[in-house]
Image 1 (cartoon, rainbow, N blue to C red):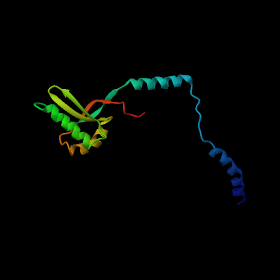
Image 2: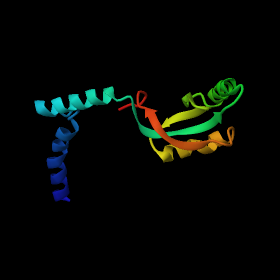
Image 3: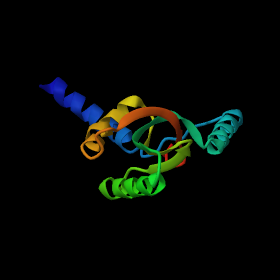
Image 4: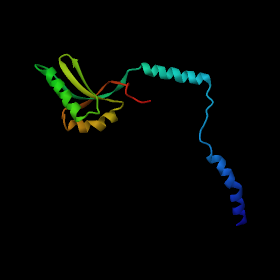
Length: 134
């Protein structure tokens, strides 16, 4: 009993020193800061990387442009949080959506999108990195 009281008396005041530390300071060499700065600048120049999109339509023929614009607007109303892209690759207008970093991330949205656009499928394509947070 006396030993436990003695231990409490000794270690109790010492514990206050551990709890009082609120910040950590790092001593970083200038060369490392230079590398971090160059890395950040390099990634700011990158606009696209390899990733995945979901194609919800490819239209050709008469009135295909108008139908593609209508499909894009419909998708925008149904899924306002997902970016939609309209492109032309002769002879088709393609409607592709999303900027997914991985195939798994694209699969998470594919089922929801296929409920409204049954022919939707995943395609590998360069995606925009502007919206990513690092």
